[in-house]
Length: 210
Image 1 (cartoon, helix red, strand yellow):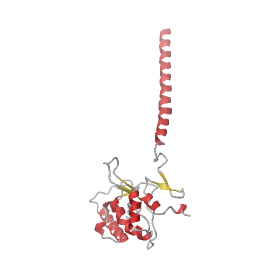
Image 2: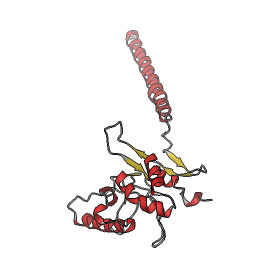
Image 3: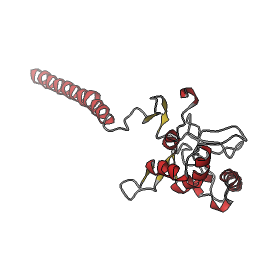
Image 4: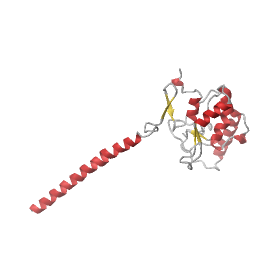
């Protein structure tokens, strides 16, 4: 009997030791390590918040924001990719939620949206519809892409220069300064961050205007 009790005690002690060890490793050390790693670098776990020149928080560099102006008013903003919806194919991305779609390239509704978007963007930028790049008329998988292609940014430079009273060279410099190349030199495509360009042009969100 004593041998049985002794073996049971040893097993209980071993089980409690394993429980305590796993509690320290999984419940303390691992979360602490993840927290510490999340604080490394400028893009931390706080959402990559972006501030304007006055220090006002205007959004995230990872979430697309597409400022809109009333119809017929001067448009000084660089625009992001569209989101699209049954009611408004030109809808901008909504930072509150993603809105991925499942319409394929042969879907009639999607093709109609693309043609409508192409016509609206071509009119806005004063170019022919054939000059509008693909990412201007198609949404990203999440609907919240913060970037556009250099081609779409270049299409908007003449309007941005005119509406912001800058030369095309000045706007091009701003765009170049906010353009990132391929990740690690070979993944993805070069991209322009829309929010950062608009901030560099002197724009901010209404709540932060002074």
